[in-house]
Structures are given as structure tokens and as C-alpha cells.
Image (tube, rainbow, N blue to C red):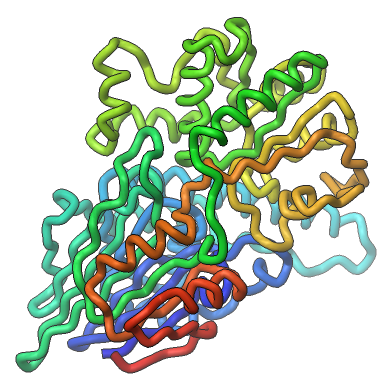
Length: 462
């Protein structure tokens, strides 16, 4: 039995881990690298294995850095089953189709620019296209429920447990029995934390011999949620009072829905203006919200209580939904409004246009409510850059910048330690999905286990 790490090895994107056992090859996630140009090149490189030789792909959740290379995997020969939760399947479909559209648009743009140069010959090709994304959807299989074992084949069983990260997200236990010997390998996926709105807390993990564990925030604690919500309200009220716009770069999945949930609460509790105008300017977030409404079985008790009172958790009078690009562009003429747009790391999407029109304005604010990977525009702004490049323009950063950590969908250091403490003293723990500093700090806090921080494409006997 072997494990190899073909993504999220000493970084936080591109999750992709390969288990080989009983003559089967099982992939856990197949995510896209996100960040700088080197990451884009890594997406085009060989996977480190033959896609056609993969029998099963177990998908922990529908974020791009976990599912974003599945269409490319399919394009290069994968024909196995993709097993996940029903909610993850729907969200992954949305994410992969959106990614394919972006890949196609970027290729067209690069070819348009290149066509103006002399001796232009090479055509830019998208990493994958819409047809590739649609084709891979045919191989998805839904599990029946969390904590109910799914037999992949004789001797290999997978069980999904609620990870509390986003809708439908899972930790996955892989149980392998061979020649009278049993192995239990637990993949954390991305872990959420207790007390968040909409989805339940992470489930108690099962005991395992080997744990593959995310470490995104292994070196820090989050601000607690309640003060973070109050800070969000304060940022909005302060900015609206000076007639500035509040820009919130937000991930389309979970974060946007969580923001809508708390904005609704703030208005109902008179902590925000009753006439507050909020624009959800993200077609993907709008579609994701519709998927959330279809999967109420994934909600927590708090959200069920809102539904029982006859309210929509994601709706309030001042909310305006923006799908059309022309309507999005017209927002540059607005003042004193809240604009929620993707992407959360400002690497693409409509938020870049809003930054170009607002980042230089002292009366405006930009509120970051999620993780920003190294090399992204969001990280540059958060780290205090006086000027940044946005859509081929140099823009001064004069807006007030807020970084509110309590909204993160990832467990912080203490939550990671609490989760790990319930896994039954595994003999070996592989730390993935984290930057080097976060991994090293977390590694120093984990006891009674051998810690490994694998390099890209490194493999190990289990």
C-alpha cells in the first residue's frame, strides 16, 4: 500500500493524493493550483501518474483547489468513478463549468493580443474546455449519506464524514483489508470549525492508523466569530456614513452565503441600516445559493430555525442580484453600497473591476473575509501594498482595508488540534494543504505520531 502526494504539498492549492492498494489506484481530490504564473504552469504539467490508470476518485468537496483539474484528468484519459456527496457533486459541477469558461476566455484574450504581433503563430489553448467539464460529470456517483460505508471493491471501503467546511464537504476514511491485515487511512479534506452558521460543526473523526491532515491555519488562531460579525457591521456602517462603497471579495461557495446570512441578521437586529443596498455581483455565487436552498439536509439547527420562522436565510429587502455584465459595470456609478463579488483572492472575476473603480478612493473600504494565498492580488493588498496592478492598470491603494479572520471556512490551530486529538493516536501523520511556516508550527504541537511534510510527487509505503 502506497501513498503519493501530487498536489497541496507544502502549499495550499492543487490537492491531489494517490493511494495504491489491492491493485487499485484511488485518487483523493484533483484540484487546480491557484496563485502566480508558476502555479498556472504546474496545472499544465503531468499529474505525476497516468490518469487512465485511476480506478476511483474520492472528492472531499467542491472548491476549485480540490476539484478544478478533474476535467483535465478526464481529458487525459480518466474513466473511473468519481464518488462524493450529492451537494458536492452539484457545487463541483458549477465550479468546473465556471473554470472551463474562464480557461476559454483567457485563451481567446491571449490569442487576440498575440494576433497584433508580427510572426504570430502559436495559439493559446485552454487548460480544458466546457465539453471536458461536461464529460467528466457522467462519472459522478453520490454516496447515500454521511457515516455510511461505501464499498469501492472487495477489500476497500470508503466512509465520508461531515467536515463542516462547506456544503457537502467531507473527511474520508479509507479502510483496506488484505491478507488478514487492516489499514485505516483518514483524509481530513478541508476542515471547518464549530459555531458557524448554515452548516453543522465537523463530525467526530474515526480512529485511523494514518492521517493526511490539512494545515492551512496551523500557525494561528482565528478571531472569534461574534466579534468578527460586529467588525463587519462596523466596517459597513463607517463606510456607508462617509458615502463610500464597501467591496467584499468573496468566494462564491459558502462565504457569499454566510455573508448574506449575517447581513440579513444585522438588518433584522437594527445593527445595519434598514435601507442598506447590497449587490451580490457574482453569477456563480447566485447559482451556488440556489444549490444551498436545494440541499437543506446539509443545514444546521440554527438555519433550520430560520426556515421554520418562514424566512429565507439568504434573502432581505435591500439585496439585489446581479447576473448581467452590463448591470455589473453600472455599479461603478453607485455610492454608499455594499458589493459582494468574486473571486475571494481577487485573481479573477468581477471584483477586479470594482477594485479598479474604488481602490483609489479614500472613502471606500475593502473587506477581506477569507484566505489569500501568496502571490494573489488579495495578499498584496492585505500586506499593505501602496499600489497594485489591476486589469493592466496601476491603481493606488487609498481605500480602508479590513481583514476579518473569523469568517474563514478553515479550522484554526486549536480546532485542528481538537480534531486530531480524536483520531486515536495515528502512527503517522502527513501534513498537507499549508504553507511551510503553518505546517512547521502545527507539527511541533502534534504528539504521539510521526510527522511527515511531503514534497510534491513524493511517495511513501504505508
